Image (cartoon, rainbow over all chains, first blue to last red; front, side, top):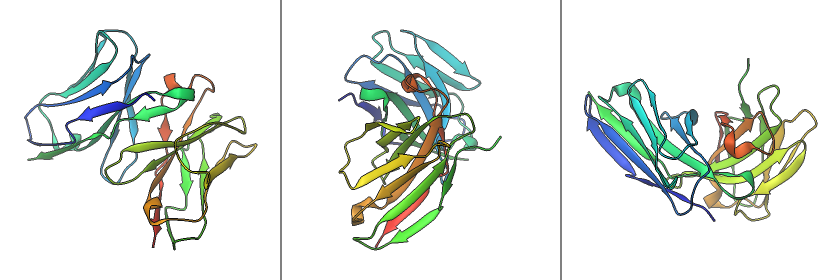
Length: 110
Length: 116
């Protein structure tokens, strides 16, 4: 079945540095979603990308969907301590299941 | 508007026992999803219910089961608990059925199940 792989698994940055997490699928995705889970919290929807090559921005966060719709990335510019958490990408699997990657845990030190 | 609510927050069981976890979706949402989040394994899809029917299940043994009630709330049952069932169980709801992969999921805070 379709799986999404995320790298890196962990990332530790100094506040103000940039951060990028990558998501790769073995198959073409009709769409991809991104979620953020704060420590001790639950996943919260960030964005959905649908079109090939799509780029969307949310303040300091930039999301991209690859031309082949098999990969995606989330880039955070000038990280802040509030960005701490685990970022998950998720793509549609079989039978309307949403398959999540294992996530990238971001730690930001001031 | 209330979000997705799950109960209990924490549940401690011993191996071989049964656990029942409950979820109330956002008002107006008809689809409920269950995910297992074990340490280091991300979110693993368990079950999807919509309009009272089980629509899909993930790669989990039959001792993981559940149901959805007429008010769209849902219950997850785990029989013959094993140590590796210890995890955070997350429930999520969406507004539309049949197009769920294109709808964002609203997650509850989860039930932390510990099997001793």
